[in-house]
Image (cartoon, rainbow, N blue to C red; front, side, top):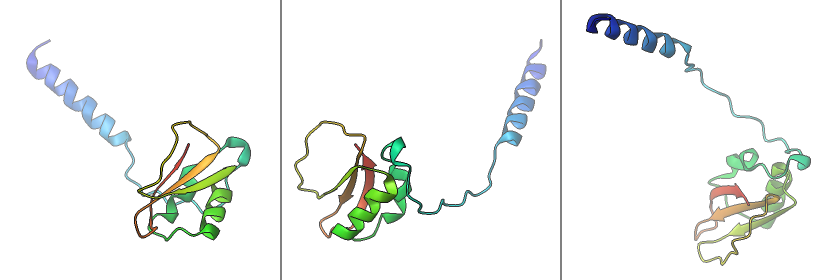
Amino acid sequence: MNLKTRFSLILATALLAAGCSSTAEKSEPAATPADPALGCTSSAVEHLKGKTATPELLEQARQQAGASTARILTPDSVVTLEYNGQRLNLNVDDQRVIARVSCG
C-alpha cells in the first residue's frame, strides 16, 4: 500500500470518528436527593460551589448527596486519612465559601 493510500485511509477514519462525537450541550440535573443506598454522590451538590457554608446548608447538602455524615473543611482543618464513602466534605475558603465538594 503506497503512502498516499495510507494517508487517505487515516484521514477518512479520523473524519468518521469526528462525525460520531457529540457537541450538544448537556443540561444540569435537578438538585434531587441521591439514593442513600448508593452512598455519597458529590455530583448531586456541585451546584453549591460559590455559596457560603452554614450548618443548615451542610445538612441540606448531606441529604441531597445521600451521605450519612457531612463536614465543612476549612483551610486550617486537620483531617485524618481514613476514607469514608458515606461522608460528604465541603471544602471552603477563609470566608467559608464552598470551593470544592467531595465524598470520602
